[in-house]
Length: 492
Ligand code: NAD
Image (tube, helix red, strand yellow):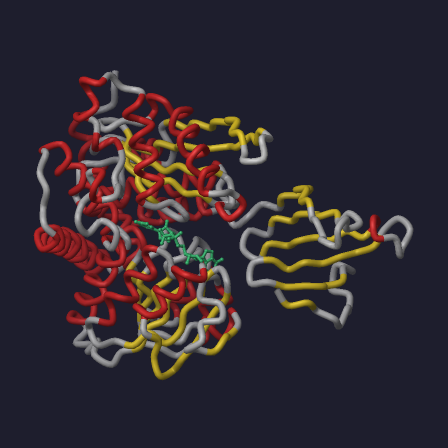
């Protein structure tokens, strides 16, 4: 955290005292100036514009303790609105059945659970979790679970809807769902996270299940968390049924019934698509440069797998900061560093850069693999790349998208680009149901075929309707769902 000593007032009359990449901390004095108790600070989140006030009590034992009170939640850029706008855009071009679009514009079920968990210090904390099921006309609800402070009902609605499109585009027999808990995992011990996960799974009860709604990893969740979910779920079914329910969750550790290749699947799918895009455009990936935002599961795997094409990673940004080395960053070495240090900050073989410089770095390919709404009108103007391959869900907002189109920067849109994860989740689910175990070669081969087929469908649709790829992907997804609704009709 950088402390700003200039102490000039900003537009709102507040005095910036510290900035991090995510938070701009400001303080103002009220009451009787000079008294430490009366100093307050405001944290302004750069991404969601949430404003928190933190009162800073007089330190005891020399440690500043800040307790945050959420006082005002300005509406954050609403991903759900973006998702619906995108549906309407496709509808305007293809003139889909109005009634079917009405159905698809709504989520089917929404569950919000408030549950208590006893913390390590003996105190009980109330937490809020969500599971939104958007649509299951193509198969069981399917979608990840996210642990993040920004999680709220609209975010989960949007992500659940994107899952429906993803399953539809890739022709897999799943619907769309998403869930999450509003928390920052960094605030909890390993044991507390286990208790939170288990209690949340219990609270979801029969709202999830192997033939009904199947969770998977997403931001800040991983195979360990999936193993806890599975174990908790299995503890609630009869002993006789247990072995028939291993597919209640995907993205499990291999030993607990996970699939080979699931860990890298989303990043692998991104790279397969970049390869086919390069082939289509007569573009040589050998020597091409790329930058990656987010160095977790998706970003670090995409970065590592791109290296196999002889391409060079030159800049990375994650929640801790951004780094650049024009001579190349070894993604394997960086992944080891991040595993040990929790982020890219202070990586010794690259120099630190700021957010704007990261976005402005000249490279061939940008792979956003962090959170939503990162490519805005402002950052899209900064980008200096030929292709954006969206590993993250919803990384580009509509204004950012317009800028990318005007600047003729190619986009492989999220619902196609990061579908490798749900494809291999489907493989895991199938293997569990059939008591089979496929080797990595088989998983990769099948993933390649399914994702490239989806790419071809999107590319051909873009050519047919003379539209951008995001709209084309949406058209492919809604066309499949429309067909199913037309065939089956609407009950009763
Ligand atoms: P993760 O938790 O493993 O990694 C998230 C990364 O994003 C971390 O490196 C974190 O530091 C970084 N990050 C968080 N906030 C940031 C910020 N404000 N600026 C820059 N970087 C930031 O999560 P993941 O599973 O890799 O998911 C990343 C994205 O990919 C999400 O949008 C997720 O929905 C999407 N996705 C994931 C999967 C999957 O299989 N895990 C599948 C499809 C899509």
